Image (cartoon, rainbow, N blue to C red; front, side, top):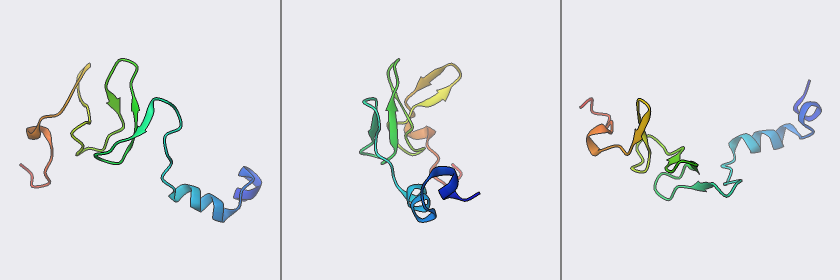
Length: 79
């Protein structure tokens, strides 16, 4: 079955949508100025969806989430 039959769009349109960078779709979604990721404001506070190296990304530590410190970031040098 083709994309046109399944989705009602052409293959070119499907490829364009796969490559697109969608914007926020709800009032809780936004584009981070620092990392450029599409993020979500959580109902209990904080934000989800930031890229790994973003200073606004929350770090999971068991049941709690905390902002990462500079020592927590992987700089790619194994240190």
